[in-house]
Amino acid sequence: MLAKIRIKYGPTAEIRIQHWQSMIHQHQRSQDMERLNAVNDFFNQARFVNDIDLWNQNDYWATPLEFLAQDAGDCEDFSIAKYFTLKEMGLDVSKLRITYVKATLFNQAHMVLAYYENPSATPLILDNINKRILPANERTDLRPIYSFNANNLWLARTRNEQLKAGKPDQLSLWKDLNTRIQEEML
Image (cartoon, rainbow, N blue to C red; front, side):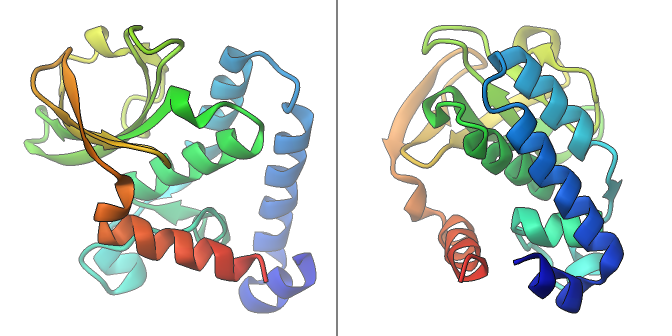
């Protein structure tokens, strides 16, 4: 696989992906918080670039490999890369939700990754704007809209209450992303 990456994206991307694979392997037996910190710190080193400038599309959800190859992406790409990396490390995806929010300080849509230690816990937020992992109740700059993981889709009724609203494959960008991830593995 690394040979294909080198050919398609170049030697610098190959090195980044080797570091990513090493981090995944190194933290497979780590505690959840250590994994969260390692992944958040690793990906938050990348550059923020809007989809239109990077992919010539208004909204494109990059696979983790595409994100690493470019060493850049927008908020969805950061959140998706963190989600799939934590999943690959063995973290239970039922504890993770990719969360679409309104970033009130910027008055714009934003995406973060939420980690729930248990189903009723206040989630911890992994973000590329505020790079510190903080409990959601300390992130008053974010207003949740909806969230999802590999199994479910939730709509936010209030800051603290979410209702199951279906399956994530209702989201066409999520379906497309997962198809491209499967193709990358071939």
